[in-house]
Structure formats: structure tokens, C-alpha cells
Amino acid sequence: MRGARSPRARICGQGQGIGMVTEEIQTYKQREDALILAHYYVPDEVQALADYVGDSYYLAKAAAKAQKRTVVFCGVRFMGESAKILNPASRVLLPAADADCPMAHMEKAAHIASLRANIRDLAVVCYINSDAKLKALSDVCVTSSNAVKIVSALPNRNILFIPDENLGSFVRAQVPHKNFFFSGGYCPVHAAVSPQDIAAARRAHPKAAVLMHPECVAEVRALADYVGSTAQIIAAARENSFDEFIVCTEPGVLYELKKACPAKTFYPVSPVCADMKKITPERVLACLREGSGEVSVPEDLAARARRPLERMLEMGG
Ligand code: 13P
Ligand code: SF4
Image (cartoon, rainbow, N blue to C red):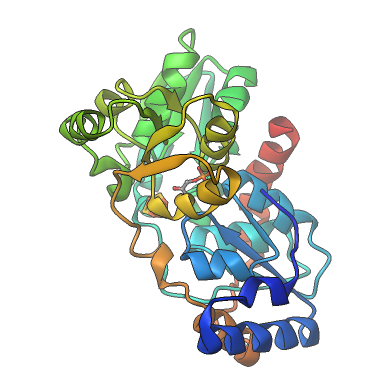
């Protein structure tokens, strides 16, 4: 996580094309009173032009307190939706309006209703990687960096964790006194990594420690040295005495890892998230210039989805 830097410093060495696009973005940013937020998975050149780059929790907090007329969210739809719900006074623009997270829809309202009807003392805990309709049916939202803390603090004994069963099982292992139900959702990017991939990476890089995201499946997580959100992975690489790391999350995070630890070496093992890679500097410029990709959430839906998001901000610290 880091603050704003000089736009001129950013364009050095990136060629005239990207330099001109970056210059134009700065002009439109001022004209539109805009803040640019970016997730660690978007392309390097988009991270380089953002005001703030971070994990999902950091970005949700940054969006909630942004006092700007416009927030440009360089990420997938659920991120822009959460920003709009938390900050309805700002216009939220998605540079790639077609960038969606498949996991965000991997739960059904009927399943939630059925558990609510049949299980006493149940809390519905919704990973922020979910659409507004799922959030609206939930008691609290979480991200990968605060899920253990929030679930531990809930008074309820029974937890329906939606939609990501992998993050859910990671939380369950650390909150063993609670009873968990799942919806079977998963991230196709993280679930694509197999135990054989980790074994091969360890053989190729025997001195490296394995840093991993909790969206990976449980049998792969068992092979990691450290499991955490993208921001926690970056902090672990910075603080750890190892010089080499196998990185098991979307490889966009290597941009920040290399900046944070220039003397260390990183080996990615996960595939890319095609949706995150849809965001380009040209699309950032286009949405600022044309006001395209504006996120709109009907107010009755936003009001219901806002409660679990705000509860996350209260409980997450
Ligand atoms: P975090 O950055 O919160 O770890 O989230 C990872 C992710 O998959 C976002 O889509
Ligand atoms: Fe969704 Fe996975 Fe892409 Fe994150 S990396 S946006 S969870 S598909």
C-alpha cells in the first residue's frame, strides 16, 4: 500500500505512447476531480499511474473515505460496486466495465434462505468478492485480510461462508470452535494451482519460501510457508529473511513485490486473471474522458448491501 507519486517520475522510461496517455490521464483527473484506485492484479502500467494501490480491504476503505467527485476503480466489477455502495456521493467509473469476477456470483439466494430457515444462530459471512445481491443477503462482509478476525469476533456459532469455499476453509482452520457451511464457490485463477505445481516450483527453487493466497485449495495451501492476502504477502516478503520466494497468487502482485524488495527474487506459479488484465491505461483515459463505465446500484439494493460492508469496516479495524 502506498501513497501518490509524481506523474512525471512514473512515465520515465515507459516510452512516448504510454507517457502521453499518462499525461492526458493527469489532465482529465484534475478536470474530473478524480482519485484512481488500483488492485495489485491489474497490469503494471495501470498500477504505476494509480494514486493508491492495495488489497481489497485497503481499497474498500480508501473508496469509502474518498472525498472526490469521481473514483476510477481499476479492478473488477464487485470492487467498483462496493466502492459505490460505500461512497454513494462519488461517481465510480470502471475502466473495463466488462471485467467481472466469476466467483462473485457463485452462490444462490435460495441456498442462503434455506440455511437461514433451518440453522439457528447463523451468520452469513460474505467475501467481498461477491455481487451486491449476495452482499444484501448477508450479515457481514470480509476480505482475505480480515476474515479470521471478523469471523472470530462474531457472536454466532454457525457460519455460512459465501461464496469462496477455499477462503472459508482457511478461516475454519483458524476458528475451529465454530461450525461452517459453504456454497462451493472458488476463484478459477487460484484453484488452477495444483500440489504438483508447488512441488515442481520447490524443486526448481529449493531455497525459496512459498507465499500463497487463501483462495488456493486446501491441499495446496498445506504446502505453503505463509498464507495471506495480497498486501499480507507483500509484507511477509519484506519482513522475511529469505531472498527468494515462490509466489502463489495472481502474478500482478510481482510489480509491487519487486519494488518493495528489489534485492529479492520472485517466481510466480499462478495463471493471470484475464478480467483484471482488461484494465489498460488507454481504458483509464477513455473512462475519465467520456465518463463511461459508471457503476450504478439501485438505492434499495445498495442500502441492504451497505450494512454488511459497513459492519466489515467497523469490525475489521
Ligand atoms: P486481496 O487483494 O484482498 O488479497 O484479494 C485477492 C483477489 O482475488 C481480489 O480479486
Ligand atoms: Fe476473481 Fe480470482 Fe480474478 Fe480475483 S483473481 S478477480 S477472485 S477470478
